[in-house]
Structures are given as structure tokens and as C-alpha cells.
Image (cartoon, rainbow, N blue to C red; front, side, top):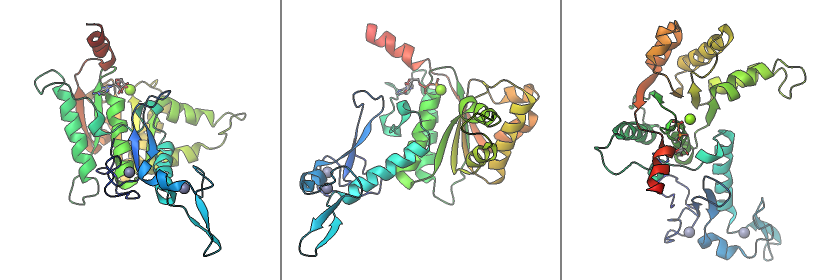
Length: 290
Ligand SMILES: Nc1ncnc2c1ncn2[C@@H]1O[C@H](COP(=O)(O)OP(=O)(O)O)[C@@H](O)[C@H]1O
Ligand SMILES: [Mg+2]
Ligand SMILES: [Zn+2]
Ligand SMILES: [Zn+2]
């Protein structure tokens, strides 16, 4: 996939048809990995046969005339690749959902099939991603809910990938239990690697520019989890940071469960969108067998 529309990197040959001048491109569905990978384009790599540290930073070559090391022709493109990879890595996006973009999502055959709700969510995501840095745009997170396999995690991660590639935004993906509540509980164990780091975890998730809280609602409802979640959401609310949530439950269920405080915060911070589409994996298993 050519990335020239979603990144501003121009480290390649402007005439190159493979990378559109970016200097690298997305190789989709690399063997052994679910998602794609970024590859150095041949328009840069062909000329890099002098780079002794091929593929390894700092990508310098010896220049005889100046008697010093200078950046190889591949230097900028390789650094840009590393920069994108580092942001995706720091965002904790699960491998299956890394390097997936709005344009790589399957939108179904027509607007009339029952997947209309997915198209609504996709349009909304598209709007957010394109206007993210526009000061006049009223930025809002989403509360995306629906059944298993309806594409909630995919859509949330696609937004992170787009924001990383387009603007270099610091993002974070957190599964509500594994990456937040259990991670905090682990810090109470004296033999844990993260012992004593509760504040660090909380601060990181509270302050990151864009946060995905995935599978919100699967956590056991305890005084502890309700308080921790409220504090996290409230802190992001106060700082006006963008938060994207996915859940199997509707937003109003939080109100019915007596979590009015969480409900009213989320109600203000997010747009609720219900995905009504069937489980993508099951649907496509049927397609393949027929
Ligand atoms: N519209 C879609 N286009 C391409 N793949 C999809 C789509 N919807 C779901 N998938 C794939 O189906 C699987 C389940 O989607 P996922 O986002 O994990 O569902 P959920 O989080 O709602 O349970 C994932 O592998 C995802 O990549
Ligand atoms: Mg999911
Ligand atoms: Zn190229
Ligand atoms: Zn080189």
C-alpha cells in the first residue's frame, strides 16, 4: 500500500510508483504476521549498496573526499520507518491490528445491507481523523458498542494507526482488565516487576493524547474498579483528551447499574455508536465455505 496520502514523509524518489515518494511502503499481510510491515522502497534501497551498516542505525557511510562518515542515501527513509514503528509499538496496539487503516477496512458490498451501522462508524472515524488538528472541529471520542466480532477493536485501532501516521500523535491502546485494572493490581505485589508503579501506569493512561479503552464493561464491578475507572475517565475529561471506548454493553446500562458518574462523563466525552453487524469472522467463514 502506498502511504503518500497518510504520511508527510518524502524520503524517496517523487516519481516512484511503489512508494509515491515516501521512501517506504506498507507490505500487507506479511507471512508469519497478521498485520503488515513497513518496507524500505527499492527507489532508496537500490542506491544503498554502500551502506555498511545495512539495516542498522545510524546508517552512515564513509566519505573519502571529506574523510568522515556521512548519512547514507537510505538514512532518512530508514529513520522514518523506525519512527512510525516506534510510535505503533509504544501505543501497545496488538499485532493483529497494527498498520491497518481506514482504506484497508472491508466495507461490504452495498450501503443497503445490514452493515450500515459499520459504515456510519467508519464515516465518523474518517471525519475525526481528517479534522483531528483543525481547531474549529469539535473533537469527540466514541463509545462503540456491539456484539463480538463486529469490528470494534479493529476500528478503534485503525483510528490510532491513522493518527500516528498522519500527525505523529502519542496514542495508547489499553484492554480494560489486562492493561489497566490487572496491571494496577500487579503493582501491589512485592515480587512483581512493576511493584510500586501504580501512579506511573495511571498517569500514562490519563495523560496520553489519545486513549483506547477496549472491552469496557467486562471488568468485575467492584468498588476498586469503579473508582479507578472513574478517576481515569474524569482525569481525561478534565484535560479534554480524546478517549475511544469499545464495549459489549450500551452506554445507558452504566446508568442503570448505578454508575451515574461514569455515565455522565462518558455521555459528554463520547458519541455513542452501536455496531449491529454480525461477527465478521463467522460471516466470512460462511462465505468461504459456500
Ligand atoms: N469490516 C472489517 N474489515 C476487515 N476485517 C474486519 C472487519 N470487521 C472485523 N474484521 C476482522 O474480524 C475480526 C474481529 O474483529 P474485532 O474488531 O476484533 O471485533 P470486536 O472487537 O468487535 O469483537 C478481526 O480479525 C478483524 O480484523
Ligand atoms: Mg474486541
Ligand atoms: Zn519508492
Ligand atoms: Zn544505506
